[in-house]
Length: 369
Image 1 (cartoon, one colour):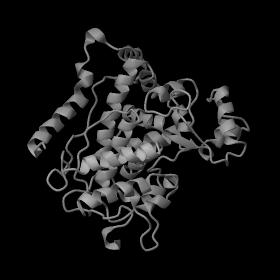
Image 2 (spheres, one colour):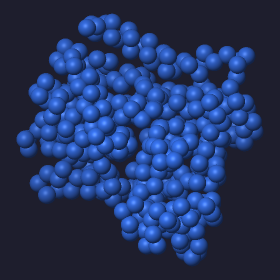
Image 3 (cartoon, one colour):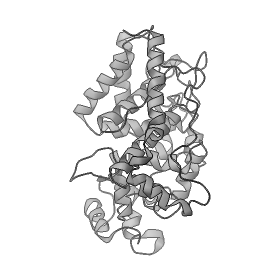
């Protein structure tokens, strides 16, 4: 087993690879995506679409690579193997865990507060409107109990969720990226922050609301468009887009930004009232679900399921949609950008050191166990 110093060296090598692959691309072999970026320089409003962009500090206070090397050396492998087992039993768990991680980090940082049930009758984040369609709670609890059996009271739910999200993305074809550990769990949930103020974009949020929510957490337009690529593996419940296919904005007609054939497909899946428990996703081939830039290609064809997704093609963000949809070069750029942005997301306001706690059950604070 590698010691902490050796693992630290490997971590910085991994980060260097993730951060520098765009720089290493030779001018003599510029991809089609680079050409596409050049084509849109004039539309950028002075914001040059360079491949170099500001990246967060890679070692937030208290987070390190291999935090559990001494206290629970098999922790990350236990998480990974359990995620694989859950995924092979139900492939939908991957998208559920990724979405759960996003919603956790957007409220008070990546502290596992979204996992808490009601305590003393007080509403939790799980009760907030944007979170009521979240899934994956039982999966996280299953992972936690497996880790607890090996290392009682040691590995936080916040770290488990961060690792499980990364491992889920890899299973569906997404890029891997380094996950620092050392987070601790909050001892409370934050219902009002999750329920109000547009802190979490709802599935039926507009483009402007979505960009604003990400910007308030320090994400650029480019990073936001990249992170929304996670929608490539998700499924959307019909009730969140029924208005777009029957009575958009009170017009009595579908949203005219949707391709007419797509309207027919959406109506066939959802029925007239949208009450059917049906879901739609961005599929790569037939009904295959997988991570990738097919999401952006679908948007350019007017096949966006969510309103905010389709609106990415109507504003300044369209240049990134076009870049990511521009073939193998665009796929490479997207994967690099997505990995960068996920490391940044993972570093939002963690509880570390003596702050917070390490829960025994992810749905209950320590004093409730």
